[in-house]
Image (cartoon, rainbow, N blue to C red; front, side):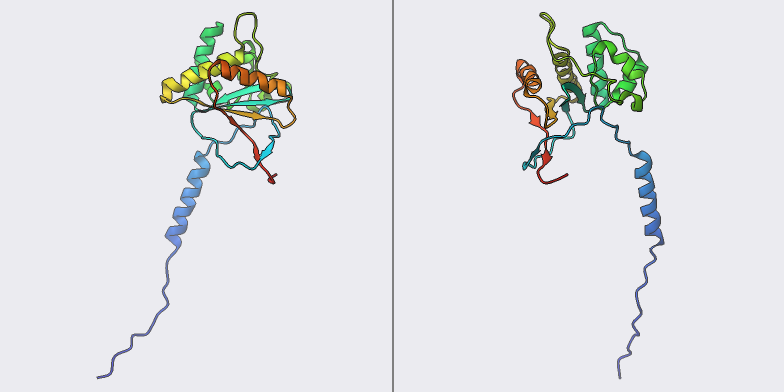
Length: 206
């Protein structure tokens, strides 16, 4: 008895459900994404051929350019803890609202006695040229510099909240004068921080 041939039919897949899911996921990521804050100090980093990625957590970044020094640390809770410690150190009272606004600032560069005024500004006004004149890096009398205190308290805050040591990175402008960078390295060595990263751009990339 001859075999019955089953006619072949083209396979049809209904992609409606897949498109709906993709649209929902895209909408979710757009709505929950946090806009990256503009940097108050833009620097043109030197180039290198090294491809070592900087860690995304427990990192403190010192930005150097135009003779100014800015500092930022990862983690909103770490920033609040660090600010509280600095407020106690310099007898500056910060409100809960100011602490919350400060926790959203990725980096800053101002004397702590002027920090309240900078926190009160909008993100656009805060990052305008000339508003932030940099964190003082020179010691006054027997007292350590403010940058020394920010670094020290950032390391304490990171250790307390994350139980890990803070990794330090220096992001310097390619045209920055060496004495400014030397002061930062001296501050790190006074705290026995001899291992840190230098942020560069990949050679051949714009």
